[in-house]
Image 1 (cartoon, rainbow, N blue to C red):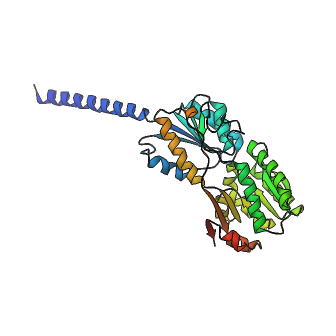
Image 2: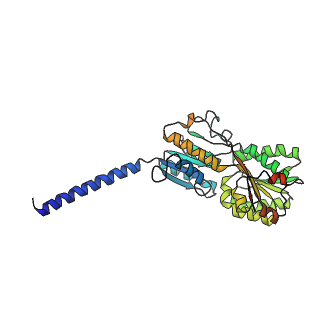
Length: 325
């Protein structure tokens, strides 16, 4: 056999080996579980990625995450959910009730893990917490109950408060329920509730102007994660109109808002990763009970309090999990 012939055979053998190796690698890549992540807010929650990591999952190594964000525009959620279904993901993780509802409407087959939702039963996501049924499970906080707790904390902070603006999107079921509960509890602590409808970022200017015009002593912002991308604008309006606001998410006092009280969202996302792990290992959503939050947090921005003329009572300040100075 000539030298040239040997070189040709070796070259052909190497090419075949490289082709087979590449084909095997491509086949392995295609076998990675694909997780859809649907949210109204931007970005993937770091706590969710942390929860996956401690369970041995890493994006682009052991799983593939397809992230779709509506960037605060709830009207985009149905199309984004449909896109994830077309991609044939193995499961969908959702943040917020509207995202969960959009995913459920888009598919009755692909498992859905709800990382955060206001009232999973009342919103029609699951049949019951203990027996979800269908393809949806995850975590649900009773946003309606937390809403009244926020009102009570606001009253403790502002003793003379008699009128509160509730800024909410009542097209979302949990927010309508929260409104009714606030209107029920309000009179018992001497507070009247005024609804300020906000369905998009453009509505906040009118909502704050109305709150100031109607001489509301403070405002409550509903637990709507689609508002998070607009935090800078909202807290700027709070400062402009000097209307103290109690928020649901810590993102707002961190952006300059007065205070927030709500679930520890990071804890929920870490626990959501546990649901993902179980489903990828063969568990059915219908057999996984919906869990509720166990950790809540109060965050207060003292710098903002000083700017808008609010004095935080010592008993409220002592209960804060985080104080921003």
